Every structure is written in structure tokens, then in C-alpha cells.
Amino acid sequence: MDIREVLEFVDQVVYDKTGKRLNDLQRGIIEGTLNRQKYAEIADSYRLSEGHVKDRGYELLQMLSDVFDEPVDKHNLKSVLERKGNLNISFGDNNIMGYINICSDRPTSTPNKSLPATPDFQRDQYQAKIEMVGKLRQFGLKDEQIAELLGLTLEEVKQVDSED
Image (cartoon, rainbow, N blue to C red; front, side, top):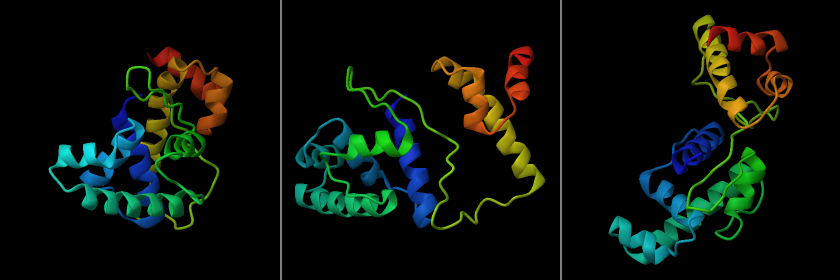
């Protein structure tokens, strides 16, 4: 998994909880923090003052603390994301690797009203789950685990092989 996917995960969780998306600077702060950059380095890349980035970073970490229901700071961001998103974040080559648990049984505190429960939406959601089967197999999950994770029947998961 690359940093883009981690940022998409965080953006979606923030959106689900607050109705707002991450801006470019917030994404840069998260990426920089995960790459162990100092605020001064992040500020340089955005041509902003260190103080401005530090202030926005503090606000971002406070927002993430609210979203994830636990204190989040520069030093524990990686571990919070690993726990909350089932992410395995590795800094071997400064890459972020792992998987995202796309089906959580935990309800969000504010329902996402932007996603209508229409037949088209349900079909698209089902198709997204089917497309995820191959990716989850690449991470070494067994069909039974995939079926449970995605809320599909074992037969539906096994049919993905015959459709490929």
C-alpha cells in the first residue's frame, strides 16, 4: 500500500465523522509525519512558514484525536492508524504497506447521508466488494476470511475465481 491509500483511508474516516475532506496541507502533514519529517521540512515543501504548518498540524492532530476517539500526536499517529484502520505501516523504503479493513462493524457517530441506499448504490457497493476479493487474496487472506470481512457468502467469494 502506498501513502495515497493511507491518505484516502484517513480522508474517508474524517469525512464520515465530520463531513469535511482533508486539504492538501493536512495530507502533507500526515505524510510528512509518517515519514518522520519535522514541521520545518514540511513547511519548506509547501513554501509556508514553520509556525503556520505547526499550527495547522496541531489543529489536524486535535481533529484526528476527535475522529479516532483517542489522543493523536506526531509520535503515535502511525500506531493509531495501524489500530484504527488495520494498517501495517512500514518504513523500509519510506513506503506505507498494509491493508485497510473496508468493512467495519463499528457505526460512525454521524451517518453518511451523502450515500443513498438506492439499488444502484447497493449494486456498486457489492461490485466494489467483489473487486476487493483479489486484492485481499494478495495479502494472504483465505476465502473464508474474505467472506467474513466483506460480508459475502463463501460461495460468492469462490465464484470470483471462475469469473477471472
